[in-house]
Amino acid sequence: MQATLISLAYLVSSVLFILCLRGLSSPEQGRRGIFLGELGMLIAVLATLVKAEIISYEWIVAGLLLGSLIGTSISLKIPMTKMPERIAFSHAFGGLATALVGVTEYHKLRGLFSAFVPSAVPPGAVEHEISRLTMGALGFEVFLGSLTFTGSIMAFGKLQGVISGAPVTWKGQNAMNIGAFFGIIALLGYQVAFPHDAPTWMFVVMCASGLLLGVLAVLPIGGADMPVVISLLNSYAGLAACATGFALKSNILIISGALDGSSGFLLSMMMSKAMNRSFANVVFGAFGTAEGTAAPSAGGPARSFNEATVEDASAVLMASQSVIVVPGYGMAVSQAQHAVRDLAAALEKRGTEVKYAIHPVAGRMPGHMNVLLAEANVPYDSLFDLDMINDDFARTDAVLVVGANDVVNPGAKTDTSSPIYGMPVFNVEQARSVIVLKRSMNTGFSGVENELFFLPNTMMVLGDAKKTIVSLVNEVKGGGGH
Image (cartoon, rainbow, N blue to C red; front, top):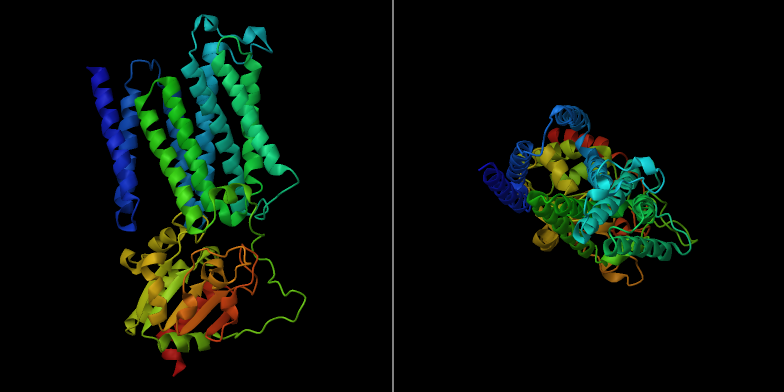
């Protein structure tokens, strides 16, 4: 009866996980999806805790309390603008936990350090039979978990600015990484083929190589490609959890890990498509430059642009019947989402229609702009993705670009020599007026000059986006001083 109830609880949890992913497919149902996922996880954890295999709860309770304390403290203190770093950090420890479970299970079966310290063999370990399926599951679990741990730490470092956001490359790097990957697979293959005879040092080397490969795989990836990296690492963590399920004979881990792994991989592919780049180009291409590099001048004189004041921009906005806001990473950096909401409210009070254009790769994680704007209580029905809003720019009086760069570069549609040629971008240049808020005329992640900044219908308002928008709000509310 107990086993039946546990299986039923796991089934309910699996259904809730599927409904969670379904809910996360749209902003309107996102909160409901998160709730269903949390409920499913709670049911799965409670069902696991009543298993007969658990003989003591002391360490479980201690871990539960400590983990809850740390997780709650981090979540309460970290600002929404740092969610990409928060997610990368969480992935790191999820991968580490999975890898440690695999290491522990292998030690129980084989004695992990028996090749180095004979006395390290646990009592009765030699009597355990380890099947090829179990060995394969443990190997994938530990390899992917180790890779996820160090890869996520590297992603966190790049997002936080501790490590350079520019690709770090050297000659033969891709060949070395690919060689290391297949070398690890070969080690695992030998252990699967000969689970009883393979020396335990192979398992240790495989674990260490996974940790090293996580560092080497993320180093050559630029900071603005981190959304794809984060979702890919999420996929690795899910596959590691799925392998853990096979090793521990846990159906709920198999199902939830498979859902996590497949959804993360599909999201990575979709985001690569949104940038019109192959998945291999993101992972191996070392694309982009350090954020904030100076605009190239090709040795010639600097190009002229229309630098405007806050008063100029507010006059254009107040004279507009329709406005589209295009947020980018600069909005997150300056934490300007609340100011953007206030500006939209001030304009709507004057009868102006305000919409938000959300590019799928704007920001540093999937849905970054949606999360920030949701925190500022921007209505979901005001957010439009690229396909839904791109035709509206030609009928719009003014576009306000807040910290976006490459996703509004018209050169992506016309300049075949540009590294972002073919990338789907917003038709911002088709609007009657364009107001761009940026700290400086520096290029975006791609390192190419943005042709939008030099068009006659574009005005550049340079400075901190939040301070500029606060000034715009005051101007709009005051009627521009007239």
